[in-house]
Length: 345
Length: 293
Image (cartoon, rainbow over all chains, first blue to last red; front, side):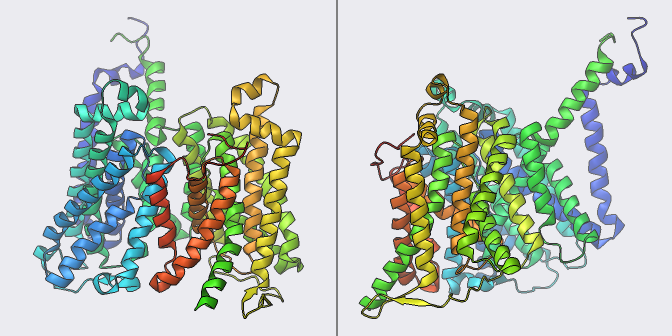
């Protein structure tokens, strides 16, 4: 023991759990305090980050855990968005309630999609394409049923004044939106954490690692995948409602398009699929990057950030398939190897 | 009315030829390597832009720059397989399609970044129509696109059936290990196959440039159609892709008549979903001797 202690040994007296709790607490305190800065721009950016993190986390519950990538989560997003908005516009139903109606509808649709896909044994690429087509189909349906959905013009929410009951917060006072989406992100993360802890999560992980082996162990893969996609669909739909309430106007392409589906999944892949922190980290990094490029580049530079995402994804899949989370883990391992070896544990 | 129907059918067939060519590229890549190439649509888009710029800058007719597009995309595809895809082929399957997704994102958004608007390639004979008698007219450019696509398809078919390299490719698609045992350099075959697949897409892009808007997101539509065709014909089934392309072209044209608002993609999606639930391995099972997986 003597002579092998080094400067870093004191760091290892604390357990990893204490580090995580401390960091988590600090981050949470900072996040709670952001609206106090009264800076609408910063609040807006962070709201966008949270929304992306929320959607990514919901996508991750299904896709990161099972390894079956869905390229059509925009379908559920759009279902939640349109359901709550149509109920709000046509029947005056509060979006808070409409949110859950949309979520339930998306749950059912997700279950149907899951049931049909997985019972027919659609996997991998086929499943990805089916979901992509399904989302695009829903978008086309929205264009067709103009009287219900407003067709190509989309839906514009009527302004009901500053009425929290109606999910209408004043445009200048973004903090209510901020806390709502913060709560949503936390809730979703808790759900993701819970999923990973219970047997259900382990079954999903087994499906991801080797589906045939999982089947042989007696796991009904179709059923578990179905439940996963239904839960994910429900959560994504809630996010759709929030998006609508925040931006107040949406077109079908924006809600159901492939663009939206991919936007949800880039942060998860880059941050690290299958982990809890991955989507959050990925959303933070990517959204921040997008804002920085938008602020610094001349206004005509469309798509620059997504160009970079493409490069990042290619590089990541080749060298860091576990994403940013994987990178952090391997750094941690190297630090531990370097400094912990030789310290009395 | 019958007039309209016949013209629609003919146009559907003409575009179907292009769908076939695109799908053949995709099915080749999938049949030989098991890679789902999400970037296939963007390869087509690249072919379009190559034809566009060759025309704009040097006045070269797109049907000539077709060969340049094919050559450039051949090289591009070769390098992608050699340096990017080969590294991850041993990993889980979804890595390959995430990688091609990344390539797609990169290529599509580079095009968006460089040229955010829709352009048109206007050749002097763009509006020339050929009369087929009894009042049916078809665009010359569509006919040329179809003819070239079909010619390339046949050329590829004979390449695969008669040449040594073609046989090596087919052998690799049937059984990779056995191919290695007989001395075929499988990684080189993979590079060639991916390159051919990319070249097919590039050729398809070049031939449709005269009558399709040249834009960064054209790839998405064609990727989906190509995938539907490949599912219809069976992954890796050359003849299936060829016939499937024509079928989808016809179905889409007919659908455009039926569905209001011109949302003809609905037919394509509908067919796709039906196919997947009926027979994901493909409806067309006759493929002669070129049928893998």
